Length: 349
Image (cartoon, rainbow, N blue to C red):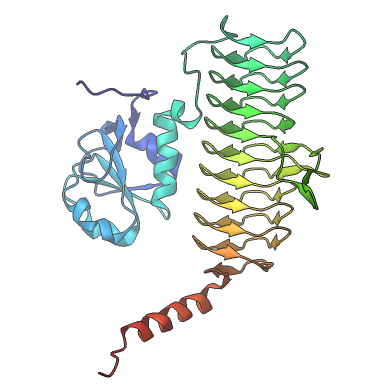
């Protein structure tokens, strides 16, 4: 089977152009930087002439030793590890630099486009006559757009996606295949990956002697600008207030966000995290994978929760919590070390 390139190179870039765009200093260059051309990106061990790579940790020193890339982003202190013939691009943050370079080389990979490689509204899509689509909207086959929905220019609606009545989606967004949006207002430059569900009922039931009485969920989901929502993530609409995802927040796959939750700006929420209803998450909060946040809690600005943590009480701003139940991270790590020491202690016969 022949190799397939799913993302096409925008154009070859000279090393001088890459260095200027990433604010890198060119080092160990035997030839003129202007004559070195970059046409791809590869991991250290697989890189070859024309490729760009990055070195961010000494644990990959062995892979760097056999690297044959044209150039490599790395820190000043790692320059002695660079093999002969590989040009060094010295930066403070190699991962950030390679991210910027990849965006230049392969801009199509930054935002999912039409899976049908088309523009405009497909004849196979179902668009209600009362829906309003600005010029430049792409709707793939099988998508459904309900009455009085509004979609901004430059937005792509993937195949079999559902945009419900009165939903508003801003400009330059990408809505993935089989995603569904109801009772939602979405800002500009938002990416919603395949299978995500926004705006369905929150989990609200009042217990009675005869069972559970369903609580009407009357709120909305509001997604601000530059948010990215991973595949198969679910965000419930609010009951009496809106569920809000703040500007620039990035949400991984398979995350559950309950009703009435308010998430601040520029947060990072890793896969399989669950946030129960009515929580308030401050700006710049990081939630590790499989962390669980109990209902009606507040996570302060800049806090970080370790993976697999179970948060049962409020977390102060800037704090680092871990464990289940979650507690200050250093205390959690000391407790784990003590338990491990006790488990290893030899018992008398």
